[in-house]
Length: 146
Image (tube, rainbow, N blue to C red):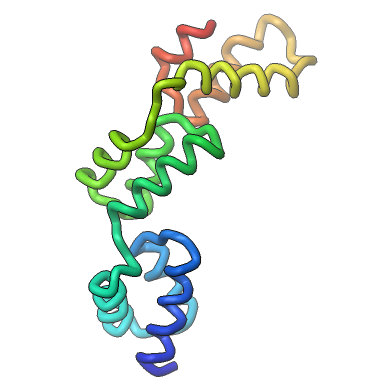
């Protein structure tokens, strides 16, 4: 694959939705693009505006909170795992409206309770706590509900 072909494919890949640099590196590796060429392609995508770490972080944080109902901890953890810098993570987390955070936790907990109606009463609190903490909600926030 030539440089131009790889650039064109990468542009289409980035135009579809916001991507992290790590996402693009993985995809370029799948396309068997040499690592030094991949870095040049990523630099080109950044200069053309196809890749933007801050924009990716904000879209990721907002979407995963609103749609997937993830907590703050899991969002931050996944952004770090995707190679996003701490300043971009802080900016993204500040841009998300967490005003209904307690209500979101309550909705997630109610949904879990409905699907786990047969859980014995004695194990219910710690199993719910484990589930909510796996979704990235903070211990202090979970304790407010129980």
